[in-house]
Amino acid sequence: MTTTMTVNLMNTIHGLYMTILILVSMGWPHLTTARAARPQTYTLPTFVETERNVTFDVGDNARLPCSLQNLGPKVVIWKKVDQVHPISIGDYIYVPDSDYYVEHRETSIPSSEWNLRIKDVKIHHAGVYECQISAKEEIVRNITLNVVDSYKSNKPGIELGGTLFVEKGSEIKLKCSASAIDYLPLDVDWFKDGLKLRPNTESRVSISKYPSSDTNTLNSTLIIKHSNMTDAGTYVCRSSKRHIASLKVVVLNTGKTSVKRTFPDGPPDTEQIRTFNQGHTFKPVNVLTLFSYFICYILIIFLHGA
Image 1 (spheres, rainbow, N blue to C red):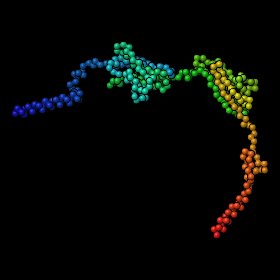
Image 2 (cartoon, one colour):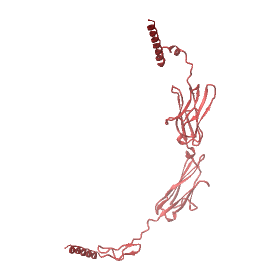
Image 3 (spheres, rainbow, N blue to C red):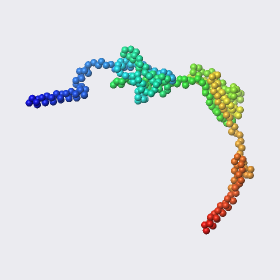
């Protein structure tokens, strides 16, 4: 009797033990109600308001700001929205691009900065970036990076283009664009073979100029109507001693009559072919003679077979 009671007691204790293990593995919601009802002491990290859209020139040291409060033990992750892998996790860079680095500063007790910096920023760096927190909750802030090439769009200099080859009698048209960064070029001069060009009284040569204050560019067009062989040469457009562009124009005399080869004894007929090649004349071939040779060859074959 005593043995039976002992076995039953042991089974009961084992069953309670297994029940407790199952409840714990499931979270034991009924026993954690009291703990959940207690006030939560953990404060979620929040972002401090900073710029969400930044613009830098090519070659600048770009800065994408990300300031937070109450980060605690969480980690800041930077990534580009169109890429799968993160750029940085904490202070560590996870992409094979040495231009990236993280600027971490503790500004105060609850606040800190985790700015993404890009050295020598380039056009391909432009896009939307995410500053996110490693938490179960989705805590993300997007920053748009714009990269512009201001120097290229306002690069000082001069460009010249237009007709390089023209038939005699046709129009020659050249276009010149002179630009500067902080001012509009006052004037451009045209030269041909070292001599300055000016519109003539015959109106065969005309020069027009169109300034553009928006881009600090002065556009000029040189037109020479009814070109002749003397119009061929080197043309130069100059806005200053430093900014000079040149190109060479060739005038083709396509109206000259070409020399045709003729046969001194008249055009060839079906019995006589004359071929002229680099001054060499081949002897005429008699078609009737060839035909006779062919008939003799057929007769020889026929007689041999008989």
